[in-house]
Structures are given as structure tokens and as C-alpha cells.
Image (cartoon, rainbow, N blue to C red; front, side, top):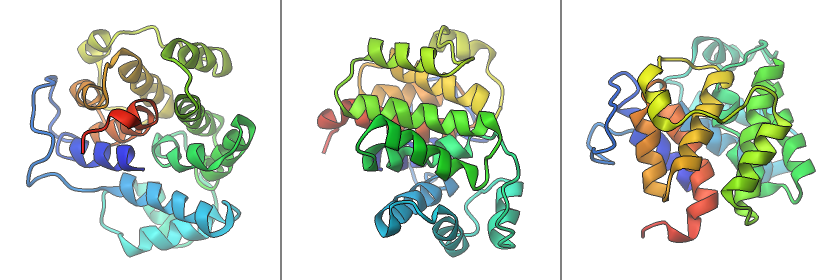
Amino acid sequence: MLGAIAGDIIGSRFERNNTNSTDFELFTDKSKFTDDTVCTIAIADALLKNGGKDFQTVLVDWCQRYPNRGYGGFFYSWFINRTQRPYNSFGNGSAMRVSPVAWFGASVEEVLQLAEQSAAITHNHPEGIKGAKAIAHAIFLARTGCDKDTIKKEIITSYAGYHLNKTVDEIRENNVFNVTCQVTVPQVLSCFLESDSFENCIRLSVSIGGDSDTITCIAGAVAEAYYGEYLKT
């Protein structure tokens, strides 16, 4: 989870103050963890406690411990009021919190099943589920030694609409704030595919603007799986 958490913290100060540069301090006194970190830890905790049999209860409990971390409105109502019903979201929150399942699952089939279950408690729209599955799939492939060409081909083949045909420069030029999986997930994967190190992936992800903490959280999760042995200590 360190890649996701680092990405969240680094991206946090740019969410409402976007930059198109890759030249910035990674951590400052304005950096903080957000809802992205809380939700990622919650999914990991649910997996460790019961193999993901009750994502819902564990996610609600963690979010109620940290209620002021920048949650989306519908999700905030979901955990504060304990409504316990999904609300058909296709926001990027399903992809943002999914990374632990890619490390827990022993096969791609198990990973994809867990990804869908972790998403569907709130993000039961097909695009919300697809986004979570695509990110979990990419992380699983990366952590099991697949190269970028293989990862790209698998994602394009498996997830309709994820063409991954834009460069980071092209994304940066036309990007706007958008929190849907349909936009966020391909952008993140494009940053990863174009990167040459964990840090470079983080910097590219921040530089495209938009929902910076979540974009960089997801990018950090994928990059950690691929570049993990080269992380600086």
C-alpha cells in the first residue's frame, strides 16, 4: 500500500491547485493523507480480517474514524448514515481503494472477483466496477513480473473503452477535473506506461492535473507493483 499512500499524500496539495510541471517538491508541510489513504487501508484491513467477506462494515468503520478527509458527498452520506446500500456510482473511488486486493489474491480470477466485490458495495455501476477491476488487474500483472507491453495489451483487450492511446502530453493539454473511472483509469495507466521509475510515474501523474490526489494514489499503487524493488529508502 505504500505506493498508493505516498501518491495520495504527494498529490493532495495539487487537487485544487493543479500544476502542469513535473518539477516540484514531493512532500511539504501542506501534504496530507486524504480519503484515498483511509479507504485503501480499510480494504486491506477487510482482507486481513476475513478475506474480504465484509468489505462494507470495515470500510464504514474506518471512514467513521476519519470523517473529515475529503470524501465525495454520496460516499460521505453512505458511511455517516450507514445506509448500507450502493448508489450506482462510476466515480474513481472504486479504483482508488482497490489496490490491496491485487496483492491478496492468488490468481487473476480471485483478484478480479475481490475487486468487483470491493467496488460493488458503493460503486455498483458497470463503469465503477470496470475501473476497479482494471486497476487491480494491472497491479496483479505488474507484481507477477509482466512487462508493460503485456500489461497494456491485457487492459486494452479486457476493458472496452480503455484504449490507452494518448500520451501524457496529450492528456495534460486537454485535461479537466473529472472524477469518473472512465476518464481517470486510462489517464493513470497512460502515466504509468510512459514512466521510467516510481518517482517519475508520480510526477507525471501530478502534472496532468485534475483530481490529483486520487490520480496519483492509483498511479502510485500500480507503479509500486512494477518498480517496487527500486523504491528509494
